[in-house]
Length: 219
Image 1 (tube, one colour):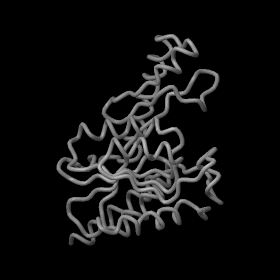
Image 2 (cartoon, helix red, strand yellow; image 1 turned 135 degrees about the vertical axis):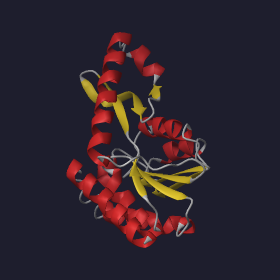
Image 3 (tube, one colour; image 1 turned 90 degrees about the horizontal axis):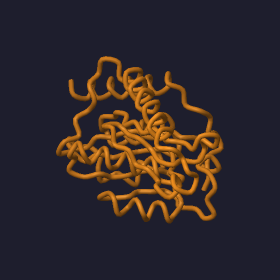
Image 4 (cartoon, one colour; image 1 turned 45 degrees about the vertical axis):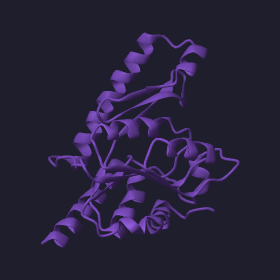
């Protein structure tokens, strides 16, 4: 299955989440930046508030596309000890990359939310959305960080992921919803006709549009 773009993927995902529609105990959390257009469509269908939940990959020096771990909002870090041992990555490098990632998370949170406070997820059903999952390392960090905020349930919802990764993450959450789990799987972008980069401005606009909708509904 090939999605035209992230918006179509979000609509395909949303109908699989219909049981969460029109509930006051549901929040939709997007992993920026690619997850935001997907999550915006999900939030629109469910009539739920939307926020971002940031996670950043920690890439191997010189081969940044290979993740040795990830860091998420709340300072939770997940490291792949096997990769670190195999590639003999020094602890000083790990700490330096972690510090840089933390600064980028702070920058993005300030840019995306402005003066808006993060949505409270305590006691609520948190639906964590991205445009796809490849290795699952970043998502694992996001799940563990999110759990510290004490939601009643965590639901992971993505359009596409490799079957083994989806199965592994399902053990970490209350529900795993994935539109397609293709094999073979090489990259998330292969399952989109348009997988162009999502810019900060689009993230800010979509969050603002959701807030306006939520405010109008509550009025």
